[in-house]
Every structure is written in C-alpha cells, then in structure tokens.
Image (cartoon, rainbow, N blue to C red; front, side, top):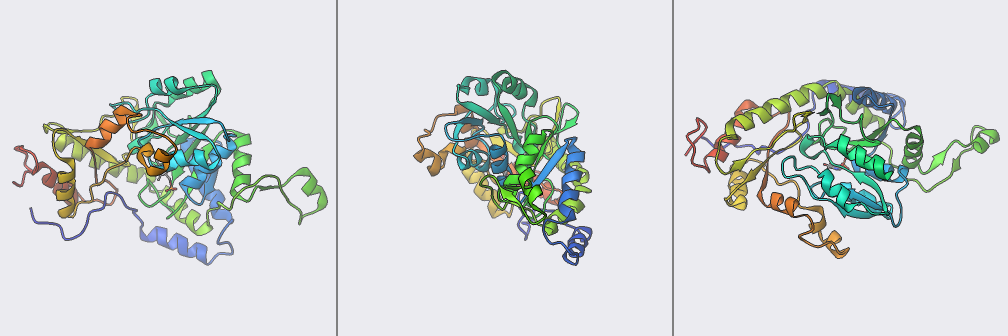
Length: 385
Ligand SMILES: *Cc1c(COP(=O)(O)O)cnc(C)c1O
C-alpha cells in the first residue's frame, strides 16, 4: 500500500460553503455578538435534544465552569467524575473551589462505573459529572437514581455525545444539566464554543448571569430606569459571538448526517478488526447509540508505543485519549496517587484512538485498516505485508 502523502488527523471539522456563507452574512449584520444568532443556536440545540433551555458559551470548559456555579458547588464540596476524560471535566470543579473525586471506569464501556460512584459518596458529595466518553452515553439512569437518593446534582459532560442516544432519547434530556462542546473535533463546531442544556429555570437564570459578569435585571434595577442594571455576583465574560453561533446554526442542519457517517466508519473498523487476535474493539451497550466521537481500540500483548509510532510514520493520526486526569502533575501535587483507579490505568496502557470524522473517505479508512492489520498476522484482504 502506497504511503499517503497527507496526514490523516484523528478528528477535524467538516465545514462547507453554506457554513461559510452563513458566517459572512452575519459579519454584514448589525450584531457581531449578543445578537439573534445566539438565541437561534440555543433554541435549535434545546429543540434537538428535547430540553427546555440552552445557554451558549465561548467554549465547553466555560460552560462546565458555569454549570458548577449554577449547581452551587463551592469550597469543601466533593464532585465525582471519571479519570478517563479531558482535564476540563475535573478542572471545572477546581475553578469553584471544590474537590475532585475520581471513580473508576467500567471495563466494557470505558465510562464511569455507577458502582464505583456509590462507593465514593460521602456527606460532602455535591454533584456527579459523568462523561459520555467516545460518544457512548454514560449509564445515566443508574447515575440519576444514585443522585436522587443522595440529593446530588448531575452535570453530564456530553462533549463527545451531541447527537448520541440513550434509550431512544437524545443525550441532553436526562441529566440536570448537560454540556456539549463545539470545538472543531467535536460533533459540530463553532470554532470555539459550548452550551449547557437544562430543564431547570433556576439553573438557566444562573447560567445567563454567570456568562455575563454576574449582571442581571433585578426588580430594583427595573425601578431605576432603562440604563440601570445590577451585578449581584462575580461572573465572567463567557459569551459566544454571533459569528460563532451562525456557524453553529448552519452546522446543526448537518449533525445527523455527520453522526451517520461516523457510524458507518465505526462499522467499517469493527468489521475489519473484530476477529483480529490482539485487538480489542469497543463495545456498545444495547440501549445506547453512540455518536462515535472516537473509535478506540485496545492493543493486547503488543507494543502500543511502537504501533503508534509506525502508524504516525505512515501519516495516520492515531492518538491516545486520555492520560488518567490525576496523573497530571497538577493533580499529583494535590495528593492524588497513581493506582487510584486501576481499571482506568490498565485501560489507558492499551488504548489507541483511530481517526474518525465525517470527512474521512473510504479510501483513507481502508489505508488506516491496512496499515494496522499489517502489524498483525491476519489473512485479511487489507493485509499489505
Ligand atoms: C472537548 C472537551 C471538553 C472541553 O470543551 P472545550 O470546548 O474544548 O472547552 C470537556 N470535556 C471533554 C470530555 C472534552 O472532550
């Protein structure tokens, strides 16, 4: 198989002429920020997932920060999350002064294990942040039941799972608040961007306030006159621009097609790799439809680093998602020890991300599969060795 001259990245945006024109039109409009496109995107996302409210932010991390604020998390509160995630799922707890508690993952789904969540609950536990890792929804019914029993808030990190389904409903309809990210590698993009969906009016109001400096229209302010407003808490400028929202609105109309293509690609990988000794393919739970943000295999009894480097040398953008969050020096300095979540750590040592995004061609996928299988003794049609 001839080496591809271009680098195949693990994930990237799919932006077309229609998207570009939509942004250009907004550039010519009266509003570049805080205009009508923001509300349009918020309504489109809320409708899509079946939630009452949506609040857009400048990125997904800011959205998670705002959700932690709205949930009332503060100094001394403990929040349980998965160690196999992007650091932002845990960092948002630190922003508001809370303590992160890592609960180990389930070895089949790679998502946080509800049994491990229960084992980590104390009097100080305030919230749970499950992550829909790779696009597969976390076991949200069980997590919501645990939360109800202990009076906890559930903030679902759906950065990977916009468009995915849990028991026939879109992710975003289940948790108290759900975050979606619109970073270029995510299901749809606004360049940078994120959103929280919720059915709770109180959270909705707090999210709006936090997004804009802690400012709100109080009864007192309304009495004073049109120019008057009050800053009632310390907020941030976490607003999304209308340029970004315009891109998001245009991308929304393509979300289902994007997910469809991701599912096709995942099926191609699964079909080619399912019987290969030494490769463990990802498993999907029966009642979930993954959005396939990532396609992650585990390499058994082989040198992952060597396979990674050989694939990279062939211009294939394999990756590893993620280093257990508490292994990072920042968390080590806070006292978290290696060995804390053994299932996650064992999984991490074997994990490899294969490229998956809607713009990948069949030819590229065949090239990736062929290169991977060349490292195993198989009789596959893809085998190039
Ligand atoms: C991308 C991502 C985030 C953060 O989103 P940004 O928009 O990049 O700030 C949070 N959690 C997970 C799991 C992510 O993958």
